[in-house]
Length: 199
Image 1 (cartoon, rainbow, N blue to C red):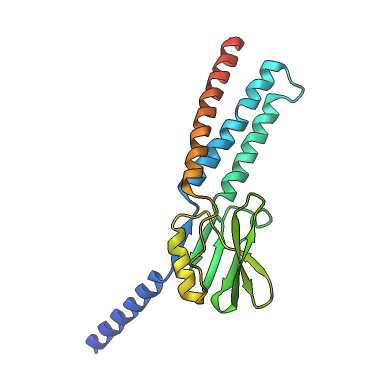
Image 2: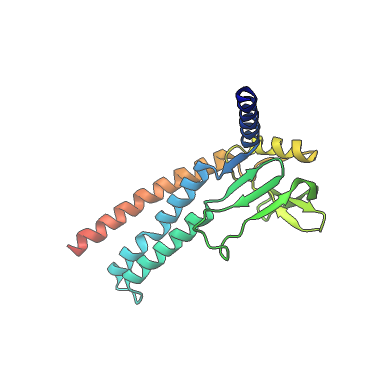
């Protein structure tokens, strides 16, 4: 009896492990997250200091509130996560993100009928899943492990995804990150001058 119970527990444990291993989770690329957050800081943080230096009509305290609020919104948008399992694909955000700001979606594999490409204004390509109801779901394209996700989607849906490529190549964000670092250095110099004049 005890051996049978032990064998049953072992089988249930192996099934649970197999089920857990079938779940794949992908987050936004750290390179993209860091670059966009630093770019936001470099573009907005100097504004309150410049408002004090130029005696602007908008008080710097109000600008600080706006900068902080915008930073929270950007961080919420960058918390995107893609979850794949044997049932379907799900795009979700952190629990603290309000649904009216960023609403995720879930699409079962059985509902996927096709993958359609659409050109962007910058000349790139984005891809949409088409469901049986005719609704389109944007394929996340800025996540870490994009090629691994594409292979999993292809295996689950039998769609031909050999030509699917990320929307932006890493070198583009490395260039943007480099420009952002230069801008941050200039911002630091400007803020230092403003603070010295205030003293």
